[in-house]
Length: 66
Image (cartoon, rainbow, N blue to C red; front, side, top):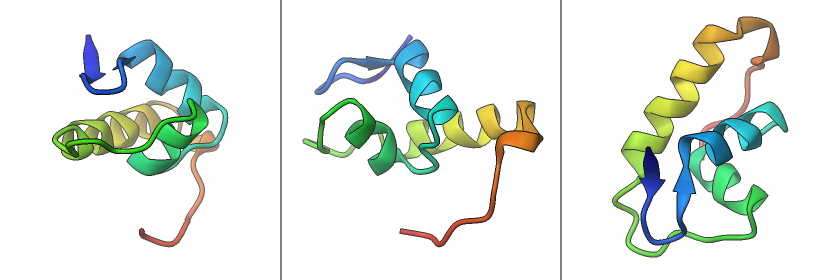
């Protein structure tokens, strides 16, 4: 499923970014060399990141909010 239509980021690409250390929607896009365009994907991408980190709690760490 596509999460960010503007930058063509799907769940697989977002998961790769999270595994590489991305912990925010902005970091997921930056991992792929993108920036927010319309921003409508922020909430969905944030939920995806939270779900991915819940599935692998040993990969998560505390970070400051954006």
